[in-house]
Length: 339
Image (tube, rainbow, N blue to C red; front, top):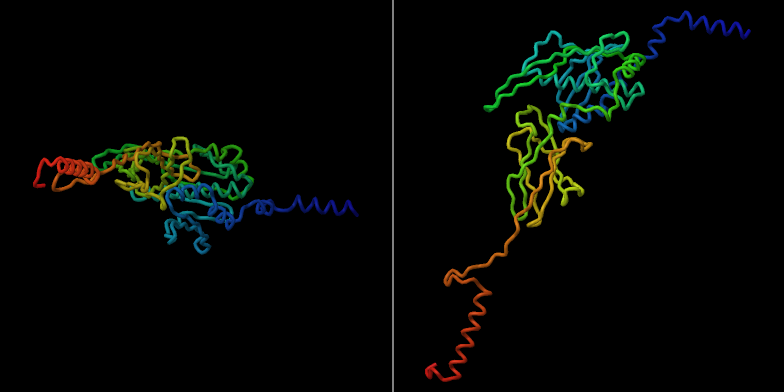
């Protein structure tokens, strides 16, 4: 009887279609969306831009709709999905100055999706290597096509030459087994991952003015040729010694992508040295130079008598006493009988 039961179980395993087992390995799209909204990668970019990125499932159009900000401003529905993969196709789109910015945000969304799939597959501390571009979808479950665009732009008399990597096509499988292959071949530890885009946005501090109790700082990009059409935020920290504890002094994040951005630190001690730095990320790894500033030393002020030009009251007092004593001496000697 036992042999018969075992035989039936083996027959079920052997003759069950592979698609049934494959379905069990597919991640649910609802879980992917939820994990995306908790992604460390997306959160780090949100912290940089001072916003909130959210993804919502649109089952009617089978798209992943993305919004930004507290008002949930709609920015993209380029991501399509099925039960087995997620896809973004810009191959028929001609890159322009207007849609390059959108392409940057789509790149962030792609990184967030990869982060979500890695996390759901048990690899929370892994992310994709910077130059990873597998071509075998059946083995690694990922296709990533980009195009290098050369930029030549003149802004306020400054010529900017450079390049940007534009996302043309993205497709990733929801199959956990393929994701495991992807992680093993193209994954890297998150703590080892350095995003060069963030490094390019590092802030720089300079002194605009000082007084006896205030310091006004200027904050801008470290790279003077860099500009951004999107907000880039940082916090300013102050310490009383260069190796001391740095405490955040601004109440709201400072957007230093704007022109001529300043911040004034108040209620300081006169003649004292302070140390400042601007930090743009929550992990406090991307910070500006440390700026040393000394407030102006206060000088005691005296009040000048407008009639005599003498300073009062401390100078007038001994003069009054001197003439008073002289008066009584003269009177005592009777040098002037009419006095």
